[in-house]
Image (cartoon, rainbow, N blue to C red; front, side, top):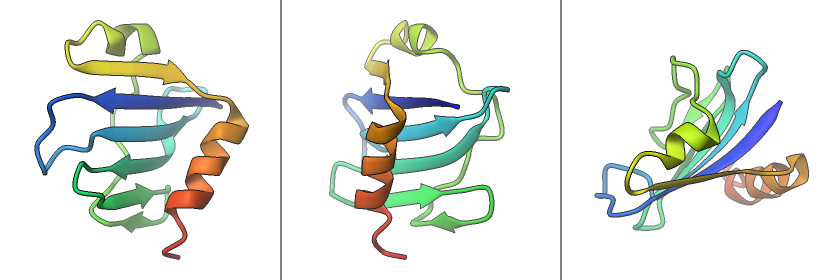
Length: 93
């Protein structure tokens, strides 16, 4: 598994400002957290969607590829960093 955080600058209320993703060996999301500029959060797994968040049906690009897009900043996370975010933002369950 890979873990990634993507910060999206100049977002609207409909686009998250931060996305955390857990990504499998085929580059598909397994778990995701979306954080919006108004404080709203959503998350998804392969069997659960909350707050309007769903997993992408397309492979997730590399950090380098994402960082080539203006307004996007991505970096790899450690497994423990993703789990800390998952615990923090999925307390609604």
